[in-house]
Length: 112
Image (cartoon, rainbow, N blue to C red; front, side):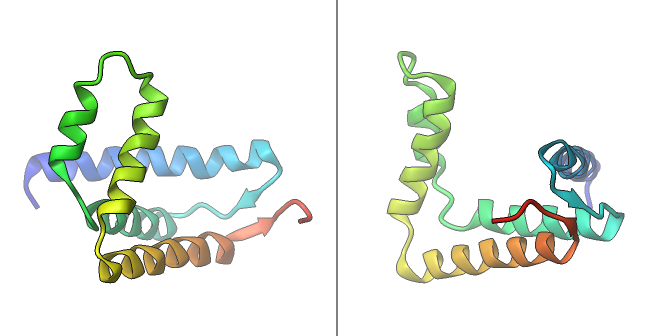
């Protein structure tokens, strides 16, 4: 792994760990350990790669009159709409894998 990739991995894991720990503030207690964090980051990276369209991101970034949060949603919509059916199925499997991982580490969750 190149130095830059290692730093990116560490940052992604730190952000993931922070987000998982913050779930407790919502009443969702998740057991946070190195293995869970690394697996969650791996799954999220897989999802990011599926249907990746750099040109969409570049075009959306140039939309100066669009709010940052709207741009994030726009990137997601463009990505999902431009995926092949095969890529979309893979994306859904990855989403399910992430959900299953997080649920397997959930100690206490709010009632549905």
